[in-house]
Image (tube, rainbow, N blue to C red; front, side):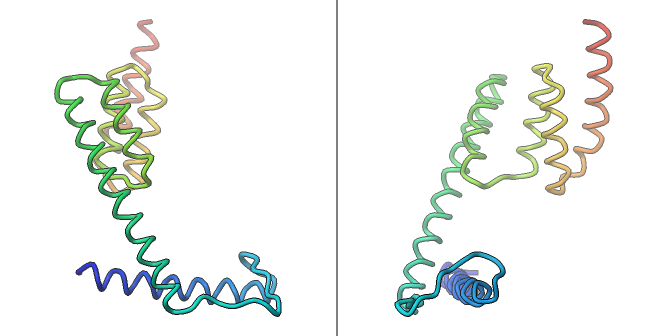
Length: 151
Protein backbone atom coordinates (compact mmCIF):
# COMPACT_ATOMS: atom_id res chain seq x y z
CA UNK A 1 0.00 0.00 0.00
CA UNK A 2 1.44 3.37 -0.98
CA UNK A 3 1.54 6.46 1.21
CA UNK A 4 -1.22 8.24 -0.73
CA UNK A 5 -3.78 5.47 -0.18
CA UNK A 6 -2.75 5.22 3.49
CA UNK A 7 -3.29 8.95 3.85
CA UNK A 8 -6.71 8.72 2.22
CA UNK A 9 -7.74 5.90 4.56
CA UNK A 10 -6.52 7.89 7.55
CA UNK A 11 -8.50 10.94 6.38
CA UNK A 12 -11.64 8.81 6.12
CA UNK A 13 -11.12 7.55 9.67
CA UNK A 14 -10.65 11.13 10.91
CA UNK A 15 -13.86 12.22 9.16
CA UNK A 16 -15.79 9.31 10.64
CA UNK A 17 -14.40 10.04 14.11
CA UNK A 18 -15.36 13.71 13.84
CA UNK A 19 -18.84 12.74 12.69
CA UNK A 20 -19.23 10.17 15.46
CA UNK A 21 -18.03 12.57 18.15
CA UNK A 22 -20.49 15.24 17.00
CA UNK A 23 -23.38 12.78 16.83
CA UNK A 24 -22.58 11.04 20.10
CA UNK A 25 -22.21 14.30 22.03
CA UNK A 26 -25.68 15.30 20.92
CA UNK A 27 -26.94 12.03 22.40
CA UNK A 28 -24.91 12.37 25.59
CA UNK A 29 -22.42 9.58 24.84
CA UNK A 30 -18.72 9.52 24.03
CA UNK A 31 -16.49 12.58 23.93
CA UNK A 32 -18.19 15.86 24.64
CA UNK A 33 -18.29 18.39 21.84
CA UNK A 34 -20.27 21.50 22.61
CA UNK A 35 -22.52 22.35 19.72
CA UNK A 36 -23.46 26.00 19.73
CA UNK A 37 -24.98 28.20 17.05
CA UNK A 38 -21.39 29.18 16.17
CA UNK A 39 -20.32 25.52 15.83
CA UNK A 40 -18.79 24.83 12.45
CA UNK A 41 -17.52 21.36 11.55
CA UNK A 42 -14.10 21.06 9.96
CA UNK A 43 -14.00 21.45 6.22
CA UNK A 44 -12.73 18.70 3.96
CA UNK A 45 -9.51 20.67 3.46
CA UNK A 46 -9.00 21.09 7.22
CA UNK A 47 -9.60 17.39 7.78
CA UNK A 48 -7.09 16.50 5.08
CA UNK A 49 -4.51 18.84 6.59
CA UNK A 50 -5.09 17.27 10.00
CA UNK A 51 -4.77 13.78 8.50
CA UNK A 52 -1.52 14.71 6.73
CA UNK A 53 -0.08 16.17 9.92
CA UNK A 54 -1.07 13.10 11.94
CA UNK A 55 0.38 10.78 9.31
CA UNK A 56 3.65 12.74 9.30
CA UNK A 57 3.77 12.58 13.11
CA UNK A 58 3.21 8.81 13.09
CA UNK A 59 5.90 8.26 10.46
CA UNK A 60 8.33 10.43 12.44
CA UNK A 61 7.59 8.41 15.58
CA UNK A 62 8.13 5.16 13.68
CA UNK A 63 11.47 6.38 12.30
CA UNK A 64 12.59 7.43 15.79
CA UNK A 65 11.49 4.08 17.20
CA UNK A 66 13.51 2.21 14.59
CA UNK A 67 16.55 4.43 15.18
CA UNK A 68 16.60 3.89 18.94
CA UNK A 69 15.73 0.21 18.62
CA UNK A 70 18.81 -0.19 16.40
CA UNK A 71 20.93 1.63 19.00
CA UNK A 72 19.52 -0.65 21.68
CA UNK A 73 20.48 -3.77 19.75
CA UNK A 74 23.96 -2.36 19.15
CA UNK A 75 24.35 -2.05 22.93
CA UNK A 76 23.08 -5.61 23.38
CA UNK A 77 25.67 -6.96 20.92
CA UNK A 78 28.48 -5.64 23.13
CA UNK A 79 26.70 -7.02 26.24
CA UNK A 80 25.85 -3.56 27.60
CA UNK A 81 22.57 -4.63 29.20
CA UNK A 82 21.85 -1.32 30.90
CA UNK A 83 22.47 0.50 27.60
CA UNK A 84 20.06 -1.87 25.86
CA UNK A 85 17.36 -1.17 28.45
CA UNK A 86 18.00 2.58 28.24
CA UNK A 87 17.70 2.79 24.45
CA UNK A 88 14.81 0.35 24.25
CA UNK A 89 12.91 2.40 26.86
CA UNK A 90 13.44 5.45 24.72
CA UNK A 91 12.40 3.58 21.57
CA UNK A 92 9.18 2.39 23.21
CA UNK A 93 8.37 5.96 24.29
CA UNK A 94 7.47 6.75 20.67
CA UNK A 95 4.38 4.53 20.83
CA UNK A 96 5.69 1.72 18.62
CA UNK A 97 6.84 -1.74 19.68
CA UNK A 98 7.79 -5.18 18.44
CA UNK A 99 7.06 -8.43 20.18
CA UNK A 100 10.72 -9.47 19.83
CA UNK A 101 11.87 -6.28 21.57
CA UNK A 102 9.72 -7.12 24.59
CA UNK A 103 11.13 -10.65 24.60
CA UNK A 104 14.73 -9.41 24.43
CA UNK A 105 14.03 -6.92 27.22
CA UNK A 106 12.80 -9.85 29.31
CA UNK A 107 15.99 -11.78 28.58
CA UNK A 108 18.07 -8.75 29.52
CA UNK A 109 16.23 -8.10 32.76
CA UNK A 110 16.68 -11.75 33.64
CA UNK A 111 20.44 -11.45 33.12
CA UNK A 112 20.39 -8.42 35.44
CA UNK A 113 18.49 -10.53 38.03
CA UNK A 114 15.46 -8.25 37.79
CA UNK A 115 13.00 -11.10 37.53
CA UNK A 116 9.78 -9.16 38.16
CA UNK A 117 10.57 -6.79 35.29
CA UNK A 118 11.56 -9.75 33.13
CA UNK A 119 8.21 -11.44 33.77
CA UNK A 120 6.34 -8.26 32.81
CA UNK A 121 8.27 -8.01 29.55
CA UNK A 122 7.65 -11.67 28.71
CA UNK A 123 3.94 -11.17 29.32
CA UNK A 124 3.95 -8.16 26.96
CA UNK A 125 5.71 -10.28 24.33
CA UNK A 126 3.13 -13.04 24.71
CA UNK A 127 0.28 -10.52 24.46
CA UNK A 128 1.87 -9.13 21.29
CA UNK A 129 1.94 -12.65 19.82
CA UNK A 130 5.51 -13.80 20.43
CA UNK A 131 4.76 -17.25 21.80
CA UNK A 132 8.34 -18.42 22.46
CA UNK A 133 8.10 -16.00 25.39
CA UNK A 134 5.68 -18.44 27.08
CA UNK A 135 8.45 -20.94 27.69
CA UNK A 136 10.86 -18.16 28.67
CA UNK A 137 8.35 -16.90 31.23
CA UNK A 138 8.12 -20.32 32.85
CA UNK A 139 11.91 -20.64 32.85
CA UNK A 140 12.19 -17.16 34.38
CA UNK A 141 9.93 -18.20 37.25
CA UNK A 142 12.16 -21.22 37.91
CA UNK A 143 15.32 -19.12 37.69
CA UNK A 144 13.84 -16.64 40.17
CA UNK A 145 13.11 -19.42 42.66
CA UNK A 146 16.66 -20.75 42.37
CA UNK A 147 18.19 -17.28 42.60
CA UNK A 148 16.10 -16.42 45.66
CA UNK A 149 17.03 -19.71 47.33
CA UNK A 150 20.77 -19.20 46.74
CA UNK A 151 20.79 -15.58 47.88
